[in-house]
Image (tube, rainbow, N blue to C red; front, side, top):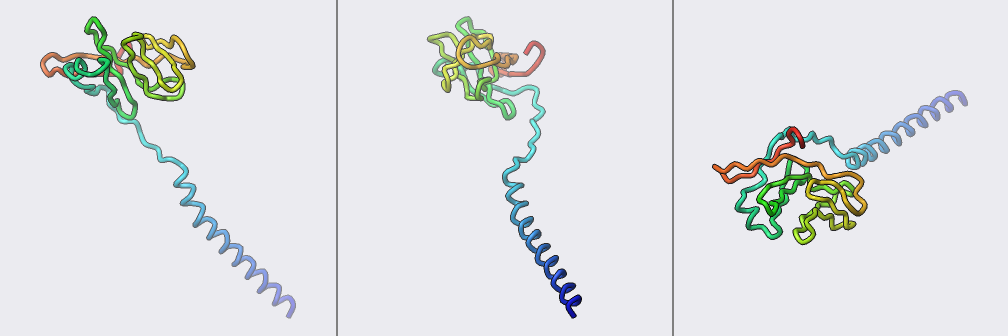
Length: 152
């Protein structure tokens, strides 16, 4: 009789333990899926339209922020009407850089980082230069195209 009670008790213990494990899994798995970000592939764009030359000339500061896939970019109209394009993510903490025509630099407002107009970091905490992209102006459409091409 005692042996029969032990078998029943151990069976109930296993059953109860399995139920607790199942409940914890049912609660824990959705929490894990929520906390783990999904893998989103980068769009395979090799060229984007950053805007028109008229927009760039009319913009305050003569620069424009645009999207290149998931990354922000910046196009700057230089005083000699040359167009330059860079990644707009500061290499320090990914803040968005701005063009400061009064200082003639690309400036990160988060920690006062500065880049020259070739993308090289010249002051502040940024550890690396900005990624420079290639800007092409199409006169027929007045569009500025930016690519991560050769020399970028």
